[in-house]
Length: 197
Length: 197
Ligand SMILES: [Zn+2]
Ligand SMILES: [Zn+2]
View 1 (spheres, rainbow over the protein chains, first blue to last red):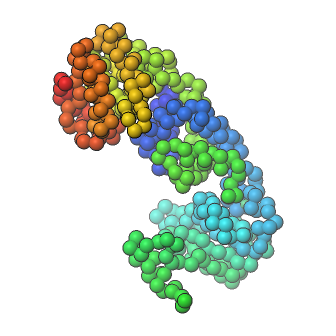
View 2 (view 1 turned 90 degrees about the vertical axis):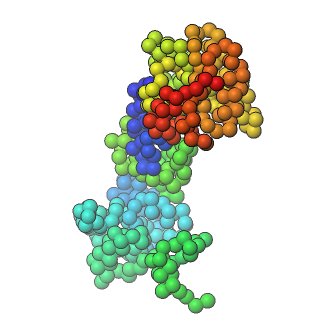
View 3 (view 1 turned 180 degrees about the horizontal axis):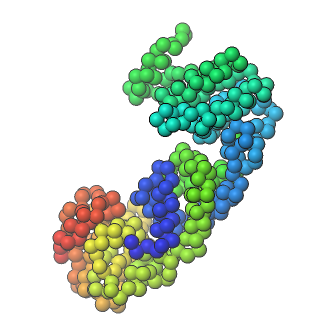
């Protein structure tokens, strides 16, 4: 490699981002060097800024810039509904849809026997505390429709079933979804949950 | 979106990298926030460093941290062979193969009637100057096997045919193939079997 040590080091760091391998990291770094003023410097500055300020909400696990996030701080979001998601990315997806007006609880993953992830490794004890302490009327289990996601949903349901109304997202054909592209499980679930027109 | 302004701004900047869309940019930023000490801060620091020091070699167009790059500065590379590539990524791919011991000339693209890229938009005048001024015995046209790459190679060959020995990489570079996608062995074989034009 003739590129200098710093450029190589930057490529190595970029290659550790999810979705980027060594080749796309090299392309990205060349792009950054070409767009130094427009992209590289602003990106470096914003990374410093986020590194200095980003933190997890102590209440729900959302990512923000204060100890308690905007959603937990907003009285308008205290409608008694609590949406349980695996990951902050799922919370962001829910927020983009705009359909949910309550608060969240981010587990930080799913139970997994294989990876030795038990309830204590997730934010499950904190969830049980919140249901006991906050004025919550409904817990919506918005976990992914994977085996680990559903195992986790069942575990949480067992813990909370006498304490609060529990719901989960409906399963079915996604809007714009083509049957031919869907897996059998989705088609089966959509068929079983079919509704009269 | 409930994520704060800085985090959103960071996602927007990351989404402008080649190979990352909005979704992968969100994933990358969450990953960075989780790996703040191990990845986000080092990445921000290294970006600042590269933004401050990276520049194009005034002689060949390679990227480095000085006005004249390591390869152009190395007397060992002055063997009379000059390898013409489209892009710095192609130069890096050649260097990874280790087969070429001479110097480079990075065009910065290809001629393209459609995109109105003429010889003046590339480093073609500088290439002709280098052939006239440096002690060059062979120019190896290592351009991509695309229509624009081959058009550019023919144009350069027309300009230099009376002045220097011209060669191109051997067949073995697949039709439509780009150097940066090839494994080292293919590049080595193509370089060793290069032919006079
Ligand atoms: Zn919160
Ligand atoms: Zn150079």
